[in-house]
Image 1 (tube, helix red, strand yellow):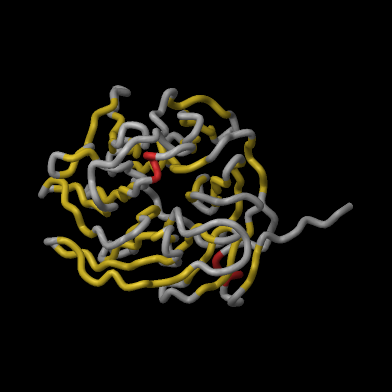
Image 2 (cartoon, one colour; image 1 turned 180 degrees about the horizontal axis):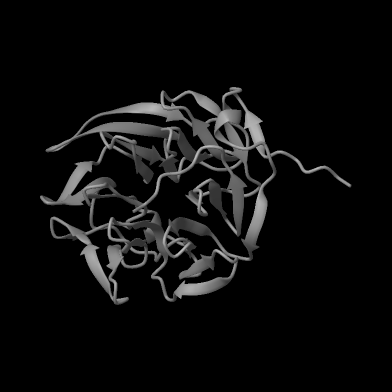
Amino acid sequence: MIPAVSALEVRDPRLHDVVADEPLRRVATGFRFLEGPVWHPRERSLVFSDIPAARMSRLSAAGELSVFRDPSHMANGNAYDRQGRLLTCEHATSRLVRQEADGSVVTLADRYQGKELNSPNDVVVARDGTIYFTDPGYGRAAPYGVPRSRELPFCGVYRLGARGLELLTDDVEGPNGLCLSLDERHLFVADTERMHIRRFALTGSGVTGGEVWARTTGAGPGEPDGLKVDSAGNLFSCGPGGIHVFDPAGVALGVIRVPEVTANFTWGDDDLCSLYICASTTLHRFRTRVSGVRAF
């Protein structure tokens, strides 16, 4: 019998305190390019996007796959708000939408100062209901979007809350994945084009700082994309070769090696210690020792 191969590239021995030393488990395959996985803690199910297929799928706790939304308008990132409503970034329509309890879909944002957004990419919701999302231009080109010219001359990171839609920064060349720190005082943003992760301090009027917090380096295809923090404040980021793990101070602990380009991930299962990984054509599952953060 051929022994199972560990998926870990260890750069700091503390990585073993954060994730398990085991191989990846393939859950489902045959997709075109996966993104935006989100776990519903009450329904015990995973929803994720296949961007080029313009379809969203649902994986039940029993492992059964079903179609969740078709067409999805080339949906990318997803997030649940504090009421358990699903927010989705649509590449084909340049919209951020929310699915209501009755199944209807409403538009939350599609324009900034009268001009159409580029293509909302990823989204996160704070505990007070404030929404943050990125808006690069990737959804205006094939194969991850509909080819068309842009109306805005920049790529931005936005906040949607009590003050309406606010541009927090346009000083990110390729804003992609994003996440909040555990205390929600900082916003982390992946700049895909510059291969690094930025950290912004959140204020009532916008953001300050924006320093380069970490860089994803190493062998293999991939770049900074999906970002999330676990319940101990460790930050996980897609990058070359798989998912890079950083401690709360930004020290690289290692990489969960994935055989395909990895775009995003989330924690699921009842203990929130199963990392569901969207890697191009395949959905993987990988166990962690530290749990993720419950969505609602």
